[in-house]
Length: 317
Image (cartoon, rainbow, N blue to C red; front, side, top):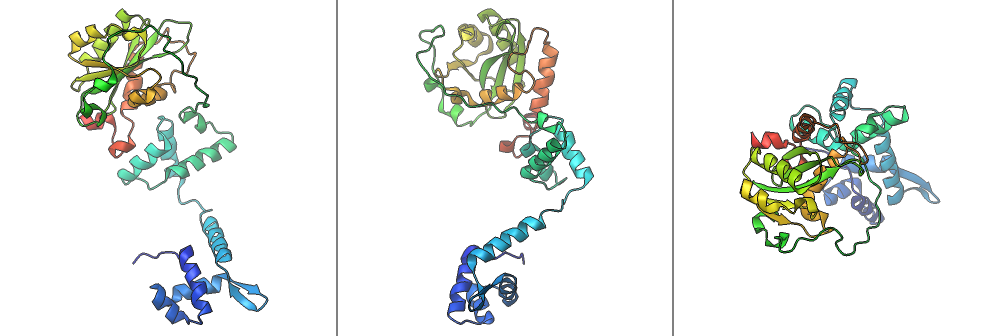
């Protein structure tokens, strides 16, 4: 039988039963606890009062919390355990992905909070593990006005998309966008993410013209190992040639509302992961397609919490 610590409500009940002059055995019976549990609770937490020794809930809870903190000071993990965690951090896995996957494989039971504490200790001692974590961006106010990019009349909007796409009920529905490094350069990458599996496809484009982006989009979707049914895009002018993409791939193309990035949440979140490799204002001029594919493979082999810590590639194979 698993032992359960006394709760704060049970401690209030002890106070009330003591006022009613109940003995230890009677308290234990009424609370559904062992007599020894009540005895230990009183022995540990009795405090001096004007009338002798007394029991105070707030003081008992405070002492309990102190004992709990002190009991956790010793590490339950060996140097080998942390070496495994460190290796996965260097693979750019998040602490939650590490904890979930190692737990699923029964290799190591560790929480993501413990991993974050390990990273913090490493940072305080001059280590650089913190640099392997995903970048955090400062929040800024966004003042939305009218859409200033070139408008395309009559384009199919996200409201017309089949309901099964939003519900992630079938494979084959993608979200796409471009990611640019240095704003003064033409080169960019085109990213496509499948909504159900999270599979990422990345292609290098020499510029953001309709012709170049269409060429990359068609290649990515044609080579996808999964079916291609729909594609939801950003409102950039580079996607104004969407009808050619539909004709070449058979996909129905839809557009998210301007300034509604959450309507393409899978793609936006994945693009955030790519910023770990291509920070803003970083040149993409010498980036090769092979490098794009290597980074996509790295992300596609990371475990995902929503898939029970299986990776996108594990789901499709």
